[in-house]
Length: 349
Image 1 (cartoon, rainbow, N blue to C red):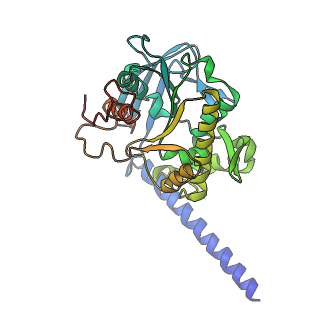
Image 2: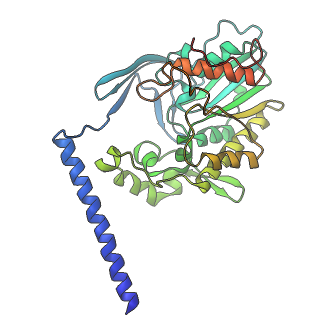
């Protein structure tokens, strides 16, 4: 009898929650329709297309292309610039001369590495090439990528085909969203990442399970349906709500495997994780613990730009070229690869 009463109470509670969610959704939709609230609408248009979609990475940059990128936020211009993609399908990083650049520095990551909103000579790899003139910079970033694309590419391809120098430095630039990308949260899979590579943590190692759609077919169908909710998008809600230890640990394991694969391809080369300034959130202490326990070197720049007075981000949240230059100068100094070794500070150019 008691079990029956508990079940009834549970069903009533679930029905109450469902009705409350429906009421919130209706209220938000009505507020949007009557313009009581205005959702933040970010639209980025690439001419011609920047990426082609499909397995195994979800999408990738289209080779041999000059792309005009225009972003608006609620109809107001956020940025307008151009990107150059080379024959290998990576963003061009210009240098005045390759002479004397006997080593390489390869940067991996998402839009912060790619340089979304910035010209070819304004990106983090570009400024690092300026600060470390003995190293040839390479940009292996793509907007929206998580760490899993870098790992899968290193598992399937050799970067020896795109890097001329025999030894150098590999850098994975971490931002807090990478944990959600690696996990494949509701927002990520509901918006753009259902075909992203899916890695699970089995014991101490990660194993590739195809795409999120292949490895989690039920969730991959459910998430896009649920994320059509105007209320969820307006309040920027996600599931899981919080990134915890197991999520951070999986991400750390993926990044550690990136380092291992990189070292296999480039023996004698160093690999580091760089925590980009202002990009440290929930779950990140566990991420650092996961990196430490796996012997991965990391450089924490979370507070590097806290005191600067110039703009750190573009309207859409991407770093400015001033921010990238400050990080590049400091990084080149910390790695002792600067033209004049030693930390270069965080002064605006």
